[in-house]
Length: 236
Image (cartoon, rainbow, N blue to C red; front, side, top):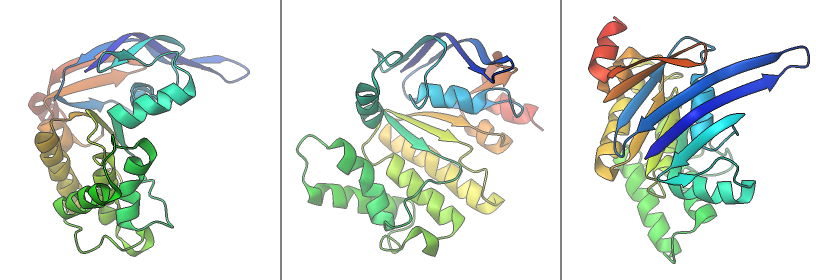
């Protein structure tokens, strides 16, 4: 589902060149739940952004569901992202002037769903909001929702167009332990019901424990690749 070869990312600060990722090779099969862990500055979020097509690598190749995205023009890349990738940000990234239902509907409206009607879209948005426990909050605006509720809206939005790949950057990072557990349960439930490949950047050992696999980064390189249960235990 995700196939990465020789991936590097460097930035020029003006006075020096900084190598953020240094030759990443990684294959993630369809349906797998993968946690990416490592210290701050190890390149986790950069790797996730490159996999999602939100940034371009310096060198290397990325294939999503058999389709190479490196080197695509932005308009074609946007189409691939819209069809293949759902993304959940730590900071939720909800549009404040839209209701929960309208936020969830947004990907559907941007991508289009092969002739499906607006009523079909609203029906799916409401079903997703109900599945994350917000069936009675669909007409509320983000400012009227708690942090945990906003993250659940973001999860529903990410699944709106049934993407084969879902990526999440610290999805529980801004939440208390109770809301964090709930969001984790919802991620795994939606992953199981939709058959989505799930890639999570996290510092949370509980989340890593529930992954099928944990990839560890340090200084821009992969230094570990192990079962999620072992990874969680290793974090203590």
